[in-house]
Amino acid sequence: EDDEMALAIAMSLGQVPSGGVAAVAAAPAQPPTAAPPAVESEERVVRRVVPADNSCLFTAIGCAMEGGAMDRASSLREHVAAVLLSAPDKYTEAELGFPLEEYVEKIMGESWGGGIDLAVLSEHYATEIAVINIQTQTDSHVRREQVFGEGRDYKQRALLIFDGTHYDLLVKQLFDGAPPALDVRLFDADDEKVMAQARAVAAEANRARSFTNLAKFTIRCLVCQKGFVGMPDAQEHAKETGATGQAHINF
Image (cartoon, rainbow, N blue to C red):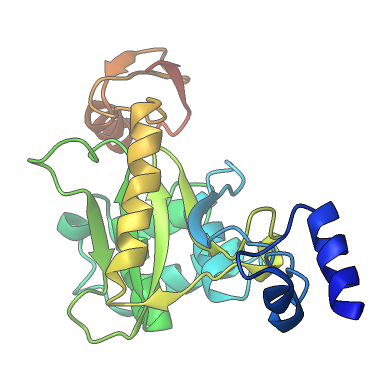
């Protein structure tokens, strides 16, 4: 009777096996199906924007090297100035583009940072600093990035992205919506996967035209009102006249 009852129940549910009653009796109970585990977003390289206050390079480096700190620009400017003044035979006018004292005065003020400062800070932290250039991502004839400290056997690397006038920090975000406090800011110097992701971020910005072409944009001196096309002429004018106030007219 028990077998017949089991068969009747199975038939009512449309689950009668080919073996009839015997098959119903012998079939093992099936465990409930577990819900699939939630899948988190894959970690990826993202751009962390820093303030555009003429100290973006120093702020980005401080954030990368000092555990996310955003207030290291002044102290890093001071360090660069001290290093330059300690080696006048190395940091000549030909190297700096300005007399040493003038360059130091600028870097201690609100002047933009550049390659000299990145090289000094790379050595200071014993860390490679890779600068990914947005503008050159689609130009196979121009280097897409410059790595300061390369070849010095440094084991870790920080990543900056440069749009022609501004530096931001590239970090690894562990999951979508992760707060900056969880960012990975330093990477193995030989991590090519991270470099490929960093280039992809820059390439996307290039496609969006999110860069400034310093060779073609127009700039005006706020002292004498003279206009220039491209940064080199404007810098030469500033060097010859001492005028430091400039304004972008168009890009």
